[in-house]
Length: 340
Image (cartoon, rainbow, N blue to C red):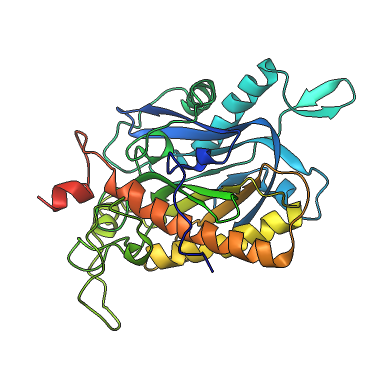
């Protein structure tokens, strides 16, 4: 459904959607961090969860039938349930900026969020006070259009099945000028690479050499996946439910909240094409969908936008893992190290 003349935006980031900014904050000693998506003004958003073990805040508000139509920011964070406190730090920043949903004389920032489990990844977890509120505020204060991907923000402590995970992003500009982008934290139980650790499942969707240009694998047919390095490492600590891929897809097309929900549902196709297996009982796979426009598009245009969002998400997953960098105490090597 995505026309061949569609191409990445100038940044190849979700911030190619005009008005969006992304901020990161991380602690390399803890091996964790938080990432926030904010905009120049509140934006329409919804969400769809397909994993069996999600960790979320305020996502009930994003159901199509709920009263609040727009939100002020979205948070992706490490830290499991502790990481949900990053939303509080972002709320502090928005409150200071006078942003939020007006209720009488009060203004309440609406900040849904989702987390990954990165509590077992080689980092120091012996903090006394929950660090995530401060990380959330620092991420909000640092939000920019040009941001880094890889081992940064909420992707700092992420692990995929066979190598370090990370934070990725990608975009497409459609022939009619509509911009679609994706932002993702890659921390799945499943593998983003085929057996042999070189070829990405997302290879058919790569643009240029944005994640190495390794292309497709010569292997074909139903493949038996190799034993997960991540699973073996987690078992040493008695942990099993330690996985999740959380993402945001966004567009400048004018979508209603109902249409954003459908966009989030369809974008999960991008996870299924780039991670094998995904949507398992031990993953918390979740996709937020955002529109910065105001209004409604017809079903044909929504179909094209949804297809583009899934493609962007597959590419963002591979880009996040490809861009991961090594750090002291890592449990798994990076993709780049495995190619040496």
